[in-house]
Length: 192
Image (cartoon, rainbow, N blue to C red; front, side, top):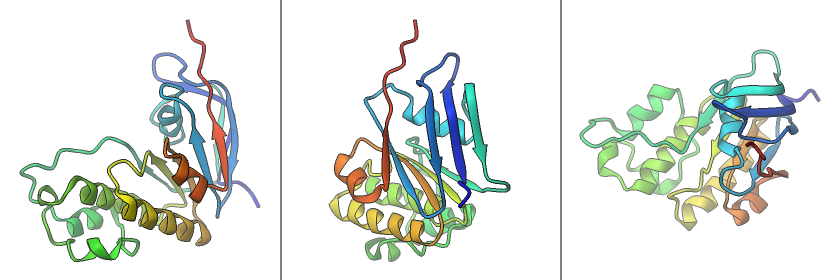
């Protein structure tokens, strides 16, 4: 099976390299985790795959016409914004089928009236439940309680089984162990 994504010794960064050379492939139905200490460029690597960060060397190859969904750690402010969870999902084309039962009855509630964890899970669903082939997740368990992490773990496995490829950055070792098929540990980049 042809990989949906291949990184051939990719060194990525912004003004200067932030990663060591990373080599990986990711196929449909596979979840790969990226781990390592803060500052090794995990989020930057996701940004490079999404076309947002600079590739200094190496190559990123995507399957033809692969669609990408990116979840970042940045959560836009919602105070005073009269947007409901249902409207957020509609804006991204997400169907909301992967929402946990405890959030389904809150879809018509304004985002600024939800808890931080509820807003975070809706933002995740706005990415996960789109028709993207390749899903990039940056610390998806941030702000989630145990029930949210357990539901997310099950949902990611379901998405992978349905044919998605998922690349996950996380410091949550238990989550990574439970959800990932393979894990790649990034090492610090020695840049002067």
